Image (cartoon, rainbow, N blue to C red; front, side, top):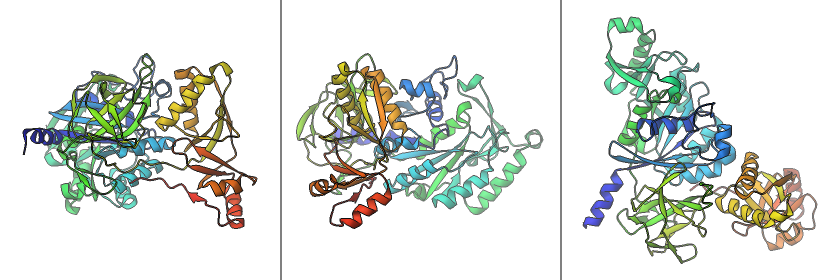
Length: 531
């Protein structure tokens, strides 16, 4: 083995690339901030909802996110902890931004599934877990908000097992019911209790004290006796962490805590280092494994423009899949076959960035001014293969968008093209509607809000949005378009992203009626690709 190969493999073993997934309001961005806090790469955590006098969370860099206290786009944070390089991808939890989250899951090796102690498994969490299962991603579970009233711990474990079909294996266990959080027991060191001293507003890491379990302690902590009994039950049924079943996606280690108070977070961070898998060889669209120590290859999984309003640049987030990335190297954009220069390459920490000279498998590199790149593109050091395609979802909401200021038409067209390239919305056009009134297609209505906010704030374009009555999209062809253009209750538009012809219908009844009347017309469902 060459020295270069040895270095690549050694550095790869030091990487952990993972995403945090959850239903909205489960505390995902707060947990992301708390992990960075415990890794000592920030000194003070921000507030989830941007309360007066407190910062916004590091991963929520967009103005709209800080104003509303929600995550509407994914963010990358790279930092070191215990001599391990962590690439943490924070994802939007809202269902309206599923496409962005699914793209992120194509770029990670593990997921941390965050559950609200009071709500348990919620719809968006179930969808995201299904994607993790489909992609073969192992999942670590963190049950959050144990400092607030919630459900019983054993009930939550039962729900995980029954609804996800996966065995929960608690690593830490709470002392006290949800809302009366007295500490934790690490099952690997069950003779001691971990007690926490909270800090003002959870701005800094909570203090930890390990105390042996004694009779006086049992009298002091009302929840200790029941917790010990529950631990005996878990020991009896053999609910212990098993690396083989975890990596196979058959079990999930479970941790309890309260991210807003930074309680239990360090134990989760240690688990990511200790049990989450390092990057492994990835397969191409043809099923061939790409060796980690081979030539460079990377997957573009996200495009984001205007992260820094002062620069108005466009960044492509690239997951390094094999080899070593070196700033300045000339790569091949496999989709076009054209060369791609990498003069400006950054390591990301939310909106902040630093130049990166070298990166290894598992790392996320931000390539600046990557106007030719799109999500799903493959970059290589001269080789010609592609990684599996990114998911494209069927839009369910449609609206016409136009600028209210004719003098800003050029900026409007540029902004629409940028939003389409990033995948913020799907942009649909037709000769009849023209370029000044494109149709936006979205998975959820909040995508329209984000798109208009960005057109106003990043391109200084005031817009008007007119909702359309269509609810269903089907793929068609030129022959189908000629016939459908004559029908009422349907409109055929071209998707800017790939030139596909989409037939939009007002409802299932109209779709069924037309399909019965003209069965030879191509009307194919738009199925999301999540491979």
